[in-house]
Length: 241
Length: 300
View 1: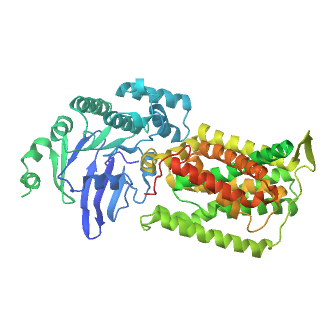
View 2: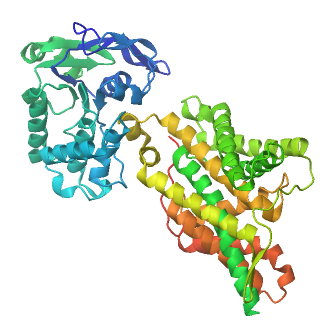
View 3: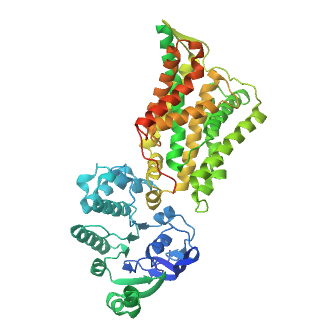
């Protein structure tokens, strides 16, 4: 392990579908403890980038490195084992399992897991997320917002070093949005690293310290919020010019 | 007449247990890999032959031979899965369901024919588990059937324990519900596909080894149980293990009682399969997802 290396890094990352580059030679490095926003117009390649950096899509070019080690070709489960967690734009839960069981699966899937400890951790996270009272409910019966929280909680059971959140604020009510912001801030203060993709610029601006903007598969801006807001390329990308 | 019905009911339950073993294997493979394994009956047949040769060539006693046959069938099935089904997991195959049907259908024809070459076309019969019959009043049932049913119940119990109480079982359940979710929580889906196909094959192989002393072995012995297993899985609800076990017992019982209640019982066995299919059609007309149905999920 090389502590000087970024926690996760995409170098010259490329993915094309047919003749179109969804991600076009992207460089993106995220260091431990960062809270990065990844934004861009629809079709700019944000979710594809997450998919490539978490093993859900095979890369066509470039490399993904976790703590300096190349992990190209590793399946998504391998990324999870390295502490790279994620959530989905459309939540992907084990619908027929209870809320608690959803939390236990990742905990028990880890090597040398102790069930009693895993259950304790699961209940601690459910308490933190305000889902403790629902632990026996089937996941498919939760509301959309509660499902997003459960997906976040389930990702936490992996004790991830970094969490990619794909549109965590999409389709949630303002109260729940504030709750999610609060949860992310608390977890970040505890030392977790986040990359958050969303179209909700207000929420993103309240959360992140660094903003990366993509357009047509390329990174067009990367830096502190204020600087990115003034970036003419970003303004053009969002105004469609 | 009452004695005859009693005997048929007992036989129906025995056959139902063995059907349940075969059909749960099929439903596990379906729920994890999302393919219909048309070679399942032939894997059942291979399990029977593995058991036979483990007894006759290696001298293993009949009871442990069933477990050895299951272990060999497990490895055999894993080999088939690795050799033939891995393209299903890559984006190279667009029509995955079609690929699964074609490859397993081809495999069933291949295994049936290779069995004729390897084992010969004539029936083979391994030694009995226990010679003789149990007679209680008018009920007469062979010890081999009782052992087969008892062994089947033990195996089904072990399966239910494995699926519900072990980490591997939970992981299989997770993959059956959402592959994406399973992968992000650290479960290697491909390993689960391998396990599911091996486990499904081992259950069918165990049924083959248990039934061999009752009905003998032949290369085409998998054809009818295969059809029955499809009926059971559809009746029980695709992907539902508990539904499959209940449907298997109901089908075994109802088919045998149907035979007993026909005016000419000597013709009954010829119509038994048709009766099973008739029940399936009726159930599907009322409940298209089966008695304990789940919605079908296609392989992504």
